[in-house]
Picture: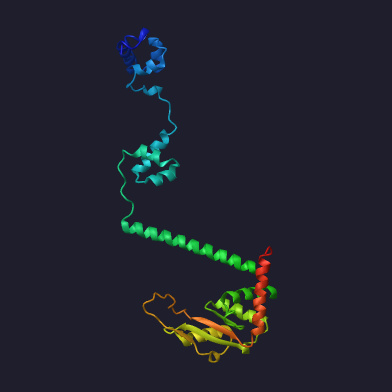
Length: 286
């Protein structure tokens, strides 16, 4: 080292001994520099390398209090996540501050942890269900009372989605509608009433799996339609395949209601024409 250090620093080891002695006596770097007349900072740091600075020269660290508090919380059994929430600092810093401390024992047994998790999921699902109800209720209230024109257009759309249609290869100018949703059936019946179709021109039939309660289904649909169940035509029964994973087997399963309107060829043509009008109005550029 002495051969590579020029000028007054040629006797580096001797100079280092003096610097270390002063450092151990509690001198700061500035005091050592002034005492030994060293004007090169790199040389100064090399002279005292490995010697800790005196405590009085250390500046207060803004994170010292956080570090101490983190260690206290860790000894109380808190996890990194809990300490982060409490102190608002990063988990990487917390890890550095407390990694020498023993890992706290788990607060909960495995069974307790699963129970808490299920409770949390239940609260989350309840909140989601409430949000769904509020959204649906708000949308329902926005609809308000339908005008005759609005009901007519809604009914045309419902029929064109779920009703029988005339084909070029099979002439079928009649009104036949089938659905399993009571609300949709009710709207369709109101639409037929708007069009002046009396109940006497309507024929009702249930389409349902043979394993279901056919009589109960007919009673349900008859009450909804406001007719006598005895007026229903023979139900269409679907063969039940036990190998299929059919889910519509609960007590609420009532199959589908088929509604056929007699002498409805002219009415069908009006519906088809109205649907074409809706399509054209929704696409004014075409």
